[in-house]
Length: 296
Length: 314
Image 1 (cartoon, each protein chain N blue to C red):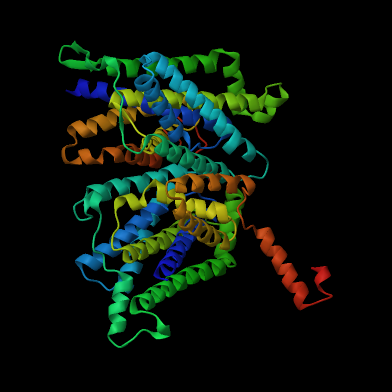
Image 2: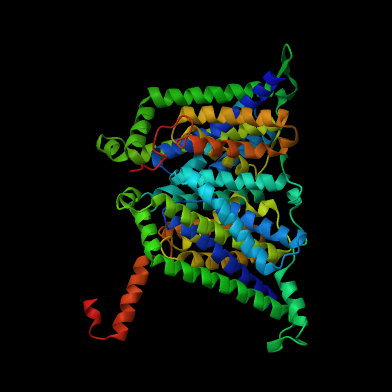
């Protein structure tokens, strides 16, 4: 039973990690929290749903379609809510509010388009179950876990091995120096926001597949979980986001399975645990320094 | 008539909420925990009135006090964190309280607290005791609502006055010093932890009082009233109005509340327009509508008017 719960938790945690990576990438280069990220995730999910259920695409093309849709939305986000606020003297509270505003628009436009009710999202692989001794792994879980892993590895490879990744890391280290060294900073910022949004969109499609439903209001709760995960893992830290996501997924699964009367507290697990960790280790599990004010 | 009184009353409560976030921001700390303190204040006031039959002038301050008492250890633990870390940690506090309120029996679970004694109804009954007819040609209900509005406005005014006075005092200067540069402030001998926790607890008290008022204004409160959206709403009041003068959050609250009432006409489009306007306001004026520079300019203009000839030297 424990192993079964671990598998369920890891599947869920994989999607948390994908969402969290989106936050952490943007924080890495811009030092802001993009509060529209949950809604980008939702738009990706609904786009994937539309491609599969209305156009009859397969899961993989729909996943890619959802990612492209979310990436385009990321470009919209950059040009409307972020770029204009990136000048000297603007407090870092402003992007917080502008992204909330944009998120509000996205969510309510989507409610007008598809309604607020959950939409059933069925993909053909739902019936298949793999049995390994006492363990049951559904095909959906395999796909969700597999795709999450592939995307995370691809991201890690892009960041560490390609020219784009080097430029992203340079901008996140120090934008002025990067610009002096010939990096096109606004181009890299745009690319990062689009990449982060694409990962959010992928997470949306995967969550839609694993819960067999999508809805216009699914963004909020996942967006908040993602926030808890990045702080847990340490801001701007991709491996921290992955570790934090998987950890929260597993802890939630265990709470539901063994928590008895406390199963209803599942949604407090992420934040409650985060709270304890921050009090003991303010920079997050894998973060380094920076979160705590220096004391003289 | 009653509708306008009610809107004005909620503007006052929102103003108190805006000030509660402003206080914490005036030490440079970003909090999303005041929705949680509001929940504490609201449920405390509601439960004290329902279960123990406390009078309303006691339940509301009791809610604020409980919030402030909780805020001290919470602040001491959390305020070591900076910026976004603090914001998310305090959001964690808010979300955890929402989940707890959702699961406990005494709080009514997801259904919330029902039949909370209503301030307007109580006042109406009280006035009926010695008034045959409401003054000013109003109905008794309207008169009671008017008094409710005056009470809330007085509380907002009191909070505003205390914050302005505190801003000019030793405490206010310590807040500003910490906001400007915490390390330098601490090097000058300011006990930064003490003042940050003080601001945090003051903010929590105001949020708790606002929560209590809200409970007694609406008959009903539920966990969904105090989550992330509420935390963000308060922050939006401050950022849109202006983060560095106490009039900022009050103006922000009044403006956004009025806007949101006005947009009721737009029905389904309401939140779309509201979100778009929020985005637009921040893009046009990222520093907020009111800035300290404006007040300094107003002060100079006032001095010139009072002492013509001397004004040029100021």
